Length: 80
Image (tube, rainbow, N blue to C red; front, side, top):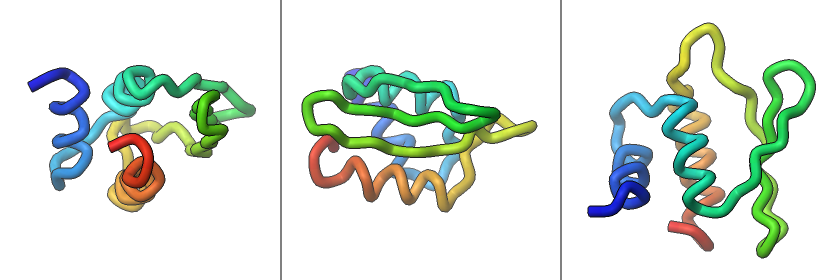
Protein backbone atom coordinates (compact mmCIF):
# COMPACT_ATOMS: atom_id res chain seq x y z
CA UNK A 1 0.00 0.00 0.00
CA UNK A 2 1.42 3.40 -1.00
CA UNK A 3 1.77 6.42 1.30
CA UNK A 4 -1.12 8.03 -0.56
CA UNK A 5 -3.36 5.01 0.01
CA UNK A 6 -2.42 4.83 3.69
CA UNK A 7 -3.19 8.51 4.23
CA UNK A 8 -6.51 8.24 2.39
CA UNK A 9 -7.53 5.21 4.45
CA UNK A 10 -6.59 7.02 7.66
CA UNK A 11 -8.55 10.11 6.56
CA UNK A 12 -11.59 7.90 5.90
CA UNK A 13 -11.31 6.20 9.29
CA UNK A 14 -12.45 7.63 12.60
CA UNK A 15 -8.88 7.82 13.91
CA UNK A 16 -7.10 11.11 14.59
CA UNK A 17 -5.76 12.82 11.45
CA UNK A 18 -3.15 15.52 11.97
CA UNK A 19 -2.55 18.73 10.05
CA UNK A 20 0.88 17.42 8.98
CA UNK A 21 -0.74 14.30 7.52
CA UNK A 22 -3.25 16.48 5.69
CA UNK A 23 -0.46 18.63 4.22
CA UNK A 24 1.38 15.48 3.05
CA UNK A 25 -1.77 14.06 1.43
CA UNK A 26 -2.60 17.31 -0.33
CA UNK A 27 0.97 17.55 -1.68
CA UNK A 28 0.75 13.97 -2.97
CA UNK A 29 -2.51 14.92 -4.71
CA UNK A 30 -0.71 17.90 -6.33
CA UNK A 31 -2.40 20.64 -4.32
CA UNK A 32 -0.45 23.83 -3.68
CA UNK A 33 -0.61 25.20 -0.14
CA UNK A 34 -1.30 28.94 0.05
CA UNK A 35 -0.89 30.55 3.48
CA UNK A 36 -3.39 33.26 4.32
CA UNK A 37 -3.81 35.61 7.25
CA UNK A 38 -3.63 34.02 10.67
CA UNK A 39 -4.45 30.33 10.56
CA UNK A 40 -6.14 30.43 7.16
CA UNK A 41 -4.81 28.09 4.48
CA UNK A 42 -5.96 27.36 0.94
CA UNK A 43 -5.11 24.22 -0.95
CA UNK A 44 -5.25 24.89 -4.70
CA UNK A 45 -5.20 22.28 -7.46
CA UNK A 46 -4.02 23.99 -10.64
CA UNK A 47 -5.29 21.38 -13.13
CA UNK A 48 -8.87 21.34 -11.81
CA UNK A 49 -9.00 24.84 -10.25
CA UNK A 50 -10.20 23.22 -7.03
CA UNK A 51 -9.77 25.36 -3.92
CA UNK A 52 -10.21 24.01 -0.40
CA UNK A 53 -10.25 26.68 2.32
CA UNK A 54 -9.34 25.58 5.83
CA UNK A 55 -8.11 26.88 9.17
CA UNK A 56 -5.08 25.26 10.76
CA UNK A 57 -6.12 23.65 14.02
CA UNK A 58 -4.64 25.20 17.13
CA UNK A 59 -3.44 24.58 19.72
CA UNK A 60 -4.20 20.92 18.91
CA UNK A 61 -2.61 19.51 15.75
CA UNK A 62 -5.46 17.11 14.92
CA UNK A 63 -8.13 18.24 12.49
CA UNK A 64 -11.71 18.24 13.73
CA UNK A 65 -14.11 15.52 12.59
CA UNK A 66 -16.34 17.94 10.65
CA UNK A 67 -13.25 19.24 8.79
CA UNK A 68 -12.19 15.67 7.97
CA UNK A 69 -15.65 14.95 6.53
CA UNK A 70 -15.62 18.18 4.50
CA UNK A 71 -12.21 17.33 3.04
CA UNK A 72 -13.38 13.83 2.13
CA UNK A 73 -16.46 15.21 0.42
CA UNK A 74 -14.39 17.70 -1.61
CA UNK A 75 -11.80 15.10 -2.64
CA UNK A 76 -14.17 12.21 -3.27
CA UNK A 77 -15.31 13.02 -6.80
CA UNK A 78 -11.99 13.81 -8.47
CA UNK A 79 -9.08 12.74 -6.31
CA UNK A 80 -9.86 9.64 -4.24
